[in-house]
Amino acid sequence: MERDKKPLLQKKSVLSLIITLIVLIAFPVRAPAIQAVDVKPAMDRAVNYLLAREKEQDRPLAPWSYVALAAAGKNLAGTRAGQSCELQLAAARSTADYCLLVFTLLAAGENPSDYRGQNLVEKIQSAQLPGGKFADNIDGSGQGDSGEQILLNAHVWAVLALHAAGAVIPEAAKARQWIIDQQHDDGSFNWCVTEKTADVDSTGMAIMALGALGERKDSPAVQKAYAYLKSVQEGDGGFSSWGAANSESSSMVIGGLTAVGIDPASEMNKPGGNPVSAMMGFQLPDGSFAHIKGTGPNEMATQQALMALSDVYYGKSLYARLREKSRAPAGTVSAGRKIQFKVGSKDYEVQVDGQGRVEQADAAPFVEGGRVFVPVRYLALALGIPETGIRWSPSDQRVILTNDGITLTLTLGGDIMYVNGAARPPMDVAPVIRDGRTCLPARYVAESFGCRVSWDETSQTVGITR
Image 1 (cartoon, rainbow, N blue to C red):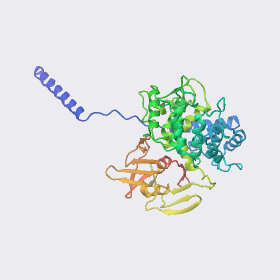
Image 2 (cartoon, rainbow, N blue to C red):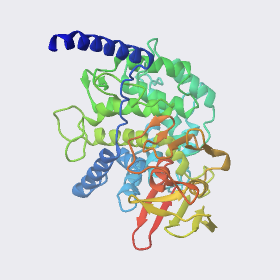
Image 3 (cartoon, helix red, strand yellow):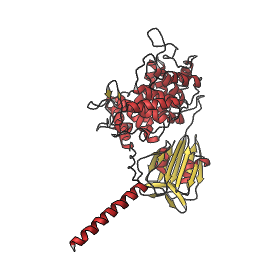
Image 4 (cartoon, rainbow, N blue to C red):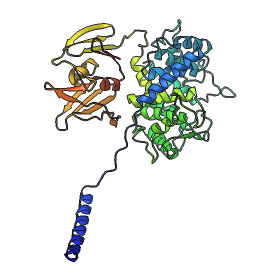
């Protein structure tokens, strides 16, 4: 009997193999998608490091550290950010100095159009030269050996400072063209316009400014810069500058790509990782980042990494987010938007620019899986999303919310949220239907639109601030 079974088994094996091949050809197995990088824990640890450092040294941090803290959603009340601004104003000379002061003031919730009796925004606007470049120094002079205008970064920071402050860039078309004219044949940039060697960090900075001036991922200049960055990207997904792999270069690339709508975590992959995962490899146990692996904490590396992580987390450039929270150039004050939803109550409060009102939903928020869920329409309207920005796709059970350049996509029963087409790390809950209404986890949605979320256990109230 055993001899009779053997040919039969061989025939079955061959038949099974043939069937398997047919199935594979007809339905090829897809490689598993690269998982979105969960940057929130790294952000929180970097924030805690910087705050602890300020307390330990008993003096202000470097100004960019306050910008980074605000970018990560930290309220700067109680920090030494105000003292930092005063010190910066006393020492400001170059255009870059004034721009950094504007960024710090915006981060601290101050008005750069009226700070200590000075209109810093107007000073920067006045530094623009006839050819569109913003001068190296605020008085219009250059920093070259013979007074030539040589600094790309002075121009970049001026564009970004005016953009972040919600101010007009006087000659925006000329300002954009000036940047494009400095681009090298290989697509790179250098901080010094007389230097024709490629610099990764400067290229990332230039892309940030181009993004603020309206360029996007399909722009020829952006595409050239993107091609250059891909050509020099290393196997682990990171970048080198001045002959050494470092965290700041990846940070600048992440900031630049985000500003023009390119997702660095999904559109810059190498076998060993992407710019985000490579940069996170420099984080130390205390939450700080090293400049080069094997060295200790570095405040500059930490602040730049934190800004880049916040761009990834929110899916939007920090300068665009500063613009959203900035006060109007004319000096008008915006108190922003504050929302309160109470579990079990159909009434909810919305306060816009200090004017409050009580609205009523047709279904009350509830808690499930440790998260507060709110009916999608009322959550979206409370966040300021217009009716035209709220869409439901019944064919694939998707909710699509669009506002201020952000498109958020969630699927009923799915734990993956997409921001501008890029997958975020899995949520610990999923959208559900309750009482005939599609309900979304409030925190995940609100934070994706740049809001801060708080929870009061005693009153069972979720607070959202934008």
